Length: 113
Length: 115
Image (tube, rainbow over the protein chains, first blue to last red):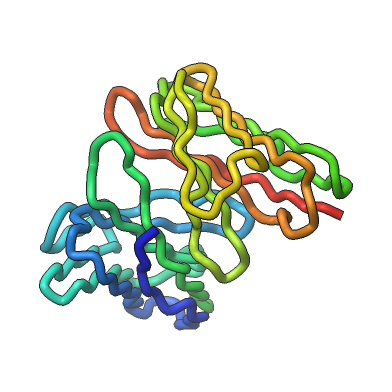
């Protein structure tokens, strides 16, 4: 598996803060970038899916991909205590059959009331 | 949304015994399923990819005789940890790719503890 770098944290922020989560990678062939949220003792759930470079927004979440820098980000606006979880970035070279994902270690986020 | 059911969610077994974990896609057909292993504070590590009706493809370093994977139908894949040892204790997660949409869904994971 290709290596994906992600700071494990933990990251603690007050409620309402803007959260920035990041990953870097070394494989320039990655084209599909995902962010997953994983609550304790649960499986990951997909939050955002982005193809190639650019931004994607979904409610309070914004995903950014900068392929030239091999750097992806997830921003959470107006963070809530319910956002407290581990956030995993994942990426893949292909979207079709195979779809094996390369995960970061995950960043643990705690949003305090 | 689509659901992937993983069973059991927790299992404790004695060293030397075998444990089977099931991964089911409940409302879609999954031609491809993936098995991951997650250690504390580590990333999800892909163990193997299984395609319905064919042998699983194992990642480098994963013992195929120890981690038996069967994908007998379009909705079920099983992972059997044979002759389990304490170092096999981990969180095992499956994911299934929807045959129709191509979306990927994860199971809730199975925590294995080998005494």
